[in-house]
Length: 293
Image 1 (tube, rainbow, N blue to C red):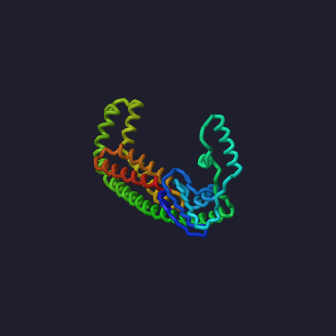
Image 2: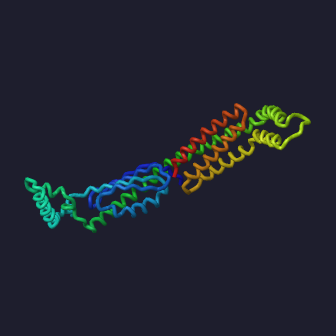
Image 3: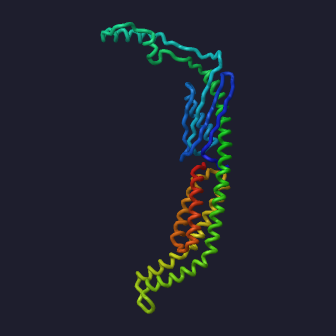
């Protein structure tokens, strides 16, 4: 099912360890990119989180935020490294003497030094917390997927509306072609006379090529056929179960190319206005396609 690349989900889960909150924020990106903000001790599970999310999304930047508010009575405890504290203290005294510094070495000085105090790293507790975090992330991923799909449906409906608008304009252009062709034929006669040098004149290769170019300039049949073909392809893509954003963006580029050629060839003001409307609808399709997975 078609998905938007934008979405947000937030799941809170009460568990034996405390309160786990998982947030996922999805924005546009060319590929799938994951960014993490995890509690201390859970960074080791980034690979598992990536695998979980890749099962749900294929493109987009996903910001993953997890917080864990531990319940009272948590088994985590504070650890002071006594040996490191004694080593720090000895080094500070030596440094104080060497630099002829005054004043005592205080506990405040020691606490400012790294890794002196830490929280217990209980493997079993980490695993228990991870199970709760995993369940919260799974629920958040499902919620994000539902929202991305709902947004994707709205966007695909808008794209279909633009495709119908383009189809209507092409129908109007086909209906207008006989009238425009009469005017173009008169202009063509004049241009061919100039290119061929008038009746009875010898025709050079260069003049013949110029005359052929004049004829091709006024023939928009090929552009109309290719535009119709691209429209059919776009509708087929919208029914696909795969990621469609890149394909629709490419089709929009092809539609733009054909519309530009059609506009350049058509020397009729009414057709020119239709082409402008077609190009506006194509631009809307492209904007939406760039937001789709």
